[in-house]
Image (cartoon, rainbow, N blue to C red; front, side, top):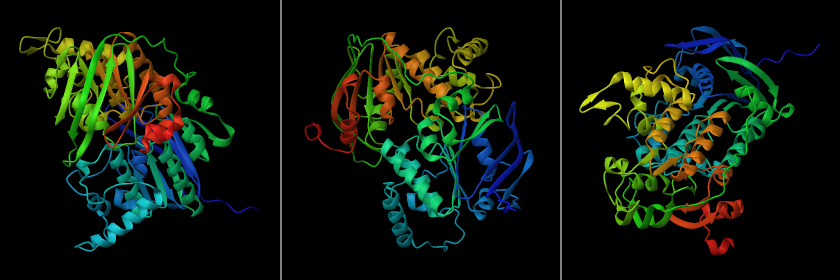
Length: 509
């Protein structure tokens, strides 16, 4: 008689609800030793909620958790840590005013009252080198790009020697090369007997990372399969309940007049160092210009200079036929520039305000949403209902606070607001980050529709396949410099990858 295999993690009948939302509905999950489980589902399907229950951030309304066959009473992340559970969250759990080193050891009871930062720094440097996760140990979190902050989260997990890893969209801000490195890390950990739950919307990563797949829809498990026995198309169909097109058709590229021009722009980063170095390019009406680059190479600073959130120290910025160098964000908004920021939680949306209020933020100063200095609440709600329906935002009502939405639905809210406000230029910084395959398809179509409607779209993405599919031209950014600009239909992905790594255009030819 064969020996019974005890799962490393077993979640039985887990249910969790929030005001107006049943996030998990009697979910069973098993994770075995040396196994990677991919957790799939549309935005708002309950994936992150289920994992937040496992890591102790939420208490389930019903259900039980067993670790290595024994009941686990997990009240907090510290309890979860005792069971060897660690989670890399989609929305970072870092203290902005503290350094990388301080965040790494924050909450560790076995560290002395006065930590040995030399020892911590050395171990962190060793881990960063081992897993190719480059980050400055002495930098404050607020000085880092979103991609660099994600690396800190991953390093924090590795530093704590977690046996059960929960990875919530960990590759959303990594390049394809870095994603492959992470894949090797996860597989190496499997060899050590560790296990992982991997939440992602990227089908190729499901196939590369996981041994088994579980699909959630509206809080319930709708399918389970061995990864080797399924395909990306089947998984996408199970997630969204329909066929998903992985290739988007678009009309031929017919650019119009110049709507955005940067001439020899320099700008400083948050740490006072040069973040943009002599950046020059033009964006035309009816064009999507993709910006490729590894996180932390000036993408955020470039988007902020264009949208008035950061001053340039040299050069000129023109929008349409007007000099808009170092103008305020409001003046640039009035020129018809819309902005989907990379940090949706702290810059793109106000969590304590309703969905309706967030959707009205770009249009509340004038009719039809206002009469003079007075807002017209009924019209704001009517606008919100129309946008919620058009962009398929999953929310109980327009009055629901944004902080109660899933990350993907927050992103849809921002996208709906900015598309409604764009008249000249759309600055879209990682607009499909954290979205499921169906929503990603919708975002890409919307960007192409804006381009076909005569907008100039400045499109930032770290997914080279997405850039090649959506963009008309691609500019590669490295350490704040433009390394080269290519027509997307003639671009070579290997050459772009080398430029992203800092090689000159001539050396890659």
